[in-house]
Amino acid sequence: MKIFAIGMNYAQHNKELDGALYIPEEPVVFTKADSALLKDGKPFFVPNHLGRVDYEAELVVRICRLGKGIPERFAHRYYDAVTVGVDFTARDLQQRLRAAGKPWELCKGFDGAATIGEWVDKEKFLDVQALHFRLDINGTTVQQGFSGDMIFKIDRIVSFISSFFTLKTGDMIYTGTPAGVGSVSIDDHITGYIEERKVLEFNVK
Image (cartoon, rainbow, N blue to C red):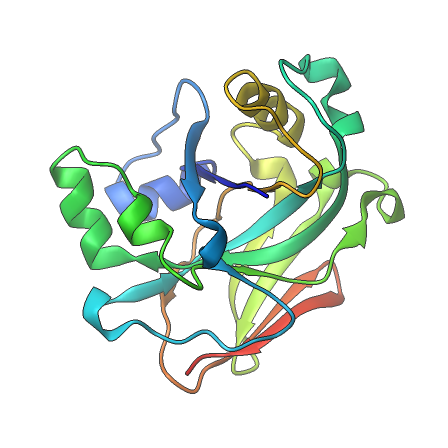
């Protein structure tokens, strides 16, 4: 099982981080270790040695068949379900790594940094590229996203990743976060929704 993630895939999020509506020329791909996966509502334990840790709510897709070099027009056949996940980011560390031109794995791939919600069959939605999703903390909405605002659409992402990596059943792709990221605190209660369906719920410890 591989965990892929896409950085800088919503223009407004890029602006809040860098002060500009930056549009990458191609998908920005990074990976997370399998030990980063946090599921079944288990709590997220804040790693004290990493400084500020931010939540980044994302629409996540699940790969359902083996594929390599997938043409974009066929990419929709290779994922079967979606959910909301949180790409936890050690923000202070990320800023240092970016400034030094270093990879992001340390700030993005640490244990527990990839929470995942309940999978929902994509056929339950008319169009996965027209989904509203949100993240609530302690009952207050902190992030709202619309998959139609992605710079690189899901089929493009699947095709692009498959040109470098063989995709296998059970792999998952975090497709990027919209604006509104912020830090988490101990005792926060986090819930995630696709449309009005709650698919994610856990506590921060």
